[in-house]
Length: 188
Length: 191
Length: 213
Image (cartoon, rainbow over all chains, first blue to last red; front, side, top):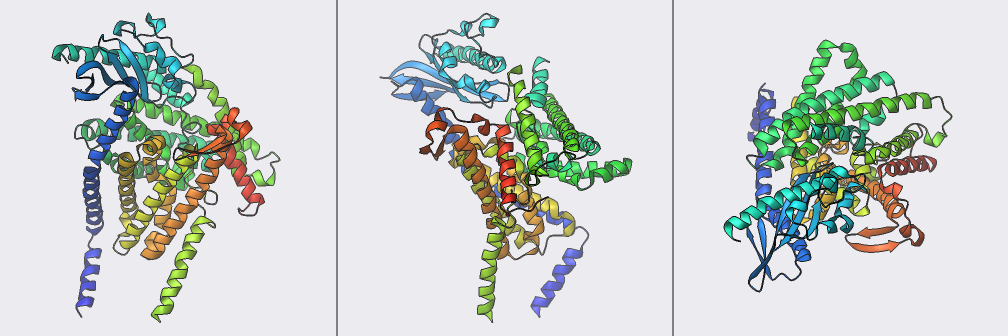
């Protein structure tokens, strides 16, 4: 008896002209809540992964490193309780999208090494910015020289990939200047 | 201005939606047999891409990023696109019934066209501003339309050729696409 | 009575599953989901990742949509399907970003693009909204596996021809001597993708697996 009555109430609800919209709204609400929950439980791990990725590369640039301290988005590289260098991420707009470069500078504020972390450039052309033949050029350069040779600096662009090359040079220089200012101001 | 031009040319020639990024393939192979259909389809998709880019650009830059809920973009973008296509469908039906009939079922299918959602996702991934996003959509849509026109012109002629039975229809269309893709790779060193 | 019903529905489960893999293979037969197929098949690794992701979303969305099929009003069914699918794709994306970052990066925008993969919306509309939860599960798994199989075949050809070797999960499986020195890199690039799928389709037609046009 109770079953039949429930069914009747059910069909009456479904015949209400607002039912479709309300149903959709409920579904959207449930979806949003679920997503916020999943986002919550994965956020920590995602941030962890991002930092881990950088730390991996950090050890490549400063293999002698003991530990690091992260201040103002600068990885201060420490050995034997002395600061031996700094590393930070430079981002620039390349040709296919954002290019992310890890820049390691030594105590004299000259580049020790750069590593291109991620890019979506043209395979075979723009992606050559990740090769040592391009990035090795940056070693030892001070900020003023981190400009393409055709613009007066010391970095030779990759043939056929000017935009990608310039994106790396420009973003590295810009970030270097910014971070060096912070380092000097805070005496890191 | 320089970077806007770069984005535009990049989207049309070098990162061509169909030949390089493989976005928008379903209508590409489905509609491209007649030239007139190709033009209508291309224009409709470009229009939706533009409006979708504008709407999602605003949502991304002024709501999602400030509130740090970028992960909601998938669900929000696709709902916006679905709503947009509905509206465009109604508008076309009211103003140009011939076009409406010509497009047929492919009109609502624009909702699931990878090119439309694709361009909005590319804009988010590259952190494009509102204007940059629209230019990217324009380039992407134009590249898509260009390909549709070229493809349909070739396929119309190909109908008369003596294609081996196993290759007739889709397979030969894929071969044509591969040759086009190969040719367009020549644009790679352009910028 | 109940025993026979149980056995029948068990058999139907596997039937639906197999159908999804062979008879109505999403890529080669229905020609759906082309966009991610060509983009993601540059390596078997990526193909496996994408396949797993699609199976996850298909399973989830088919089950949920089947569960609510009797109370979903016809008028809003497409938006409802879209929201359900989009939710699962977002969950997948977050999970990959957190626990499988290299895969997350190689798949790029093609991961969220799963949401407009015609296969998923297609199965929801054609099957899940009209069948029981158990059968919808079977259909989801079957179609998902069918898609993955197609991806793996294409990716295998592209990777072996295009790089001369096969690397899965970082483990180098094998290298073909002549090819690994000077691989046919065209197959790793867009034109090669089109060629491979054209040849495969023609081949399947000749073998009788596919119908002629």
